[in-house]
Length: 398
Ligand code: LMR
Image (cartoon, protein in one colour):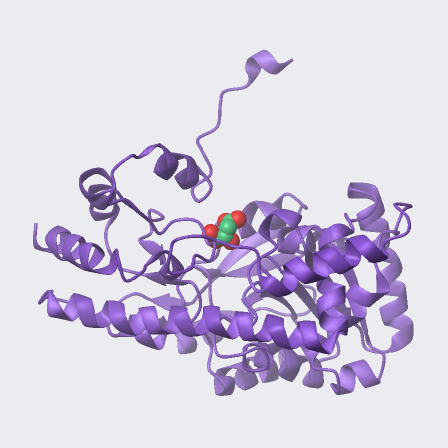
């Protein structure tokens, strides 16, 4: 049966890990996969996570099943982090949240749930979007379409074109949005644009499905949730997939959440039975370890403060590197304006290079990035930034 299979090409993002690991050049810079790295190029476990992990191990009394929705402490803590504890939708008990295996698990469970709600639904995704959105959504049987989003020339959002495309999207269809720190382009909607988009969703009746993979990495925990909170205040229904991979550094533990906002508590409860049923039919229930750590941090005020400080340090470092990279490139007298990098948010930005230039950076300079020229800003540090700017300038000049 397996003899008919041809080997697949490596995943466009994960494949870079193996490629970079094999490269022994001492000057190598890995700006590929979206993993936070500190000034020394390491991805250490956050101190708050280490302490919470210890506390959880001490407190845990059983390894019995936790059920498809996961632990209540995690679900309520993460819901309040995403929506804000005082949000009207939470006060009205309209939001139900489950723990999922990472943000990917949330996207996939959400997609299967949406397929049940709207058999022939199309999900509209931004052009471009995170490469893995496509299989996560289409493997659940949803059709995909694209709306214009990133304007390479301006390095910003083509909001008018996006809105005209979405004018034709109506009830029964879904629009996938990046809550903050757009992956891959780094260009986010402004608060005013979120409000305009919400008004369109209310008028047309399409369902926003928001992927919040980088809360806290852009402008701040509350600021990064602006779009979600505004939509939850003004729309009857919403779906939110969130990830704790980046903001808690829990990449390999696979911790995420799916929140369903219904029009009223009865509809939300009914929706939850379907979400739990999708989970049961996939992986039965989520692993508990990572969710327990996050639940512990969010419930303990000292740990929570410690975590927020560490998250702020990561965010500040990324934002400082953005400014520094712009300066270093300008100092190389490159014939291009890179100032947009300092205005964008989160881990990623496009350099705006061709595939051939990306290949040249990898082959000639051992600098690794996704083929679209997406760079992980957190992979830059004081020791490699001059070599990076010099190499980019050399490629642009060749
Ligand atoms: C990325 O975009 O690099 C990360 O989200 C990691 C992944 O799974 O693709």
